[in-house]
Image (tube, rainbow, N blue to C red; front, side):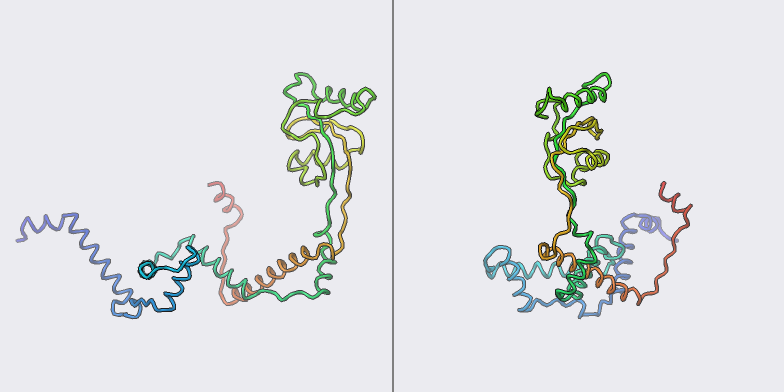
Length: 294
């Protein structure tokens, strides 16, 4: 008859832990082959020691002492052991950070392999001719603005703006300084040589559209922005133009290289992809919408 003490041992959590640990050890040994001495051998030869010393010198601007070199070698061994043990446990599997890092390393390697040759003058000119819109300089605007804060006008702020507009364009205020009229704000009173996107970034898309058609040399408005109401005087317009290729050759060459690299990288990827049997199964539209709501 089994004694009471035996059953007590079987129910003990410590006993369960020891059994589980032993089981994991035997599984690990079976999967990794305890007799594989080559996989357990780590060598730090003179070439590796020299690489460690060079890395140390680049960081500290001096060669390492013998004691420091020994510590570097031991740290390398420690890193190698932990790396191999992590691989043996499969810790590299299903890890998003590791996947992305390996992808980056492959892309860096591919970038070195697919570096395009220098373009000829004819190739560069043909690329410039085919991409005029990419190199065209945009229109630029210089203008002054008077800001009216809707919160400071309990009544109709637009009517107040129209009255001020009439005064600004009359002889009573022939050379009015916009900084001395209107409401105080952090917006600049005068802006020089801005492109339409730059105007949009400050005042919003609607205001930028008004600027494109506003008359030059006199006050106009009122125009709305994300801040409030504005009166605007266009001081100058600089129409966009296409510069000669010789004037922007470095820019054209940089863009050519960027596009060629992308094309070559895409071809290289497609060649690798062709070696795989890819099966993509996407959910239908209704299922995708349901997943997006979650």
